[in-house]
Length: 78
Image (cartoon, rainbow, N blue to C red):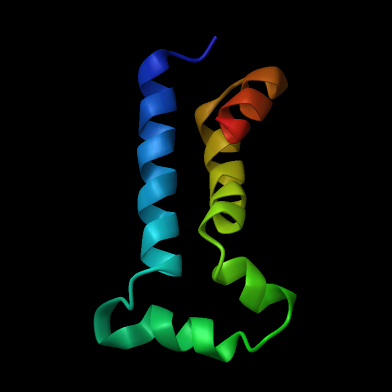
């Protein structure tokens, strides 16, 4: 079973990366330009929705942080 602190680390890392890419302009407005370059399609909706994007950020983190598939699935959704 995955220790509790990995859950906390995964949550904090997911929140920080998602906030950086969806909300903040970033250095030299690089993330703002990437969001504007996404246009108005599905990708634009993904990078403009904090909750949607956080699921995609959390998926690889859960894969790295957990050892078993059941733990990965639960960590991803947490």
